[in-house]
Image 1: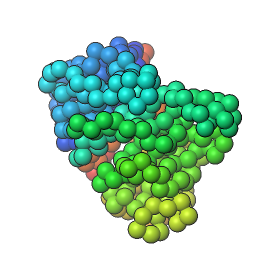
Image 2 (image 1 turned 90 degrees about the horizontal axis):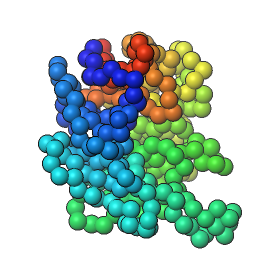
Image 3 (image 1 turned 120 degrees about the vertical axis):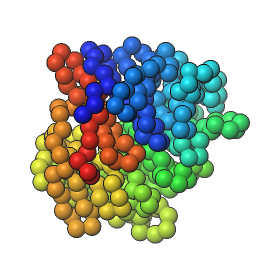
Image 4 (image 1 turned 45 degrees about the vertical axis):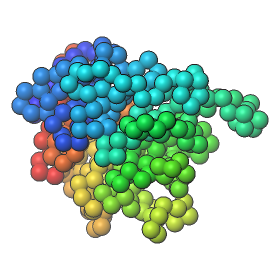
Length: 317
């Protein structure tokens, strides 16, 4: 185990660099920090003020700062504003950037946008929407996707992303959206993780204690052609963890349930204990993040009088 930081402040919103050599995270001092994942972490600050860091290149990080999306290198160079409050709708707060490093693109949220159609239907005139941005010279653009508070995750090829939300009428939903902005499919589930092939999504059912595998039947995602498989875990804690499952390979998914990690073979419907983990800090967002090669985990765990950010080996998962 490697200990990066002990603190009484908030630690969270972590993201591994594509090569697995750095970890970025938000701290209670309001800044965005990075640390080496080698023997000596040596944390250093990237943003003095920011939230929701996300890698968009090997050594470049996105973050929200003062309602805008900024880009910063890990070398301490000048920050660049990629999405301003005045972009798309003015003014509106932009945050939650989620990058796809191979393509240098990202999805983000736009808050409190006036929507005349929404106002005519239910008298609520403002919506939170999703936007798409890029590191090239193209302007950010709006995706006609409402956002009710959830996470976004890219498919490996960068041609589409999934976002999870709590819809006020439909409950927990996962939307698959093309990079062009067109919605391709909607399905039930919490905290999605996309398979290496992009043909399946692992998610959590309501109440935890199991695993959902959502499979497309055809060559593309379509709401009417999705197969849902429910797999049960050997134990159930009675609490739905906000930590998404993660894929080891095309048939194996790891799930966190009650301070234990279970390895699930989705083809044979067999689950086995991978390892026990320290007590995680409980909050409504992830506190556990696997490395790109799945050999290590970053975790925010309870420690005496506070919390710690640590790295764990995953026992040869």
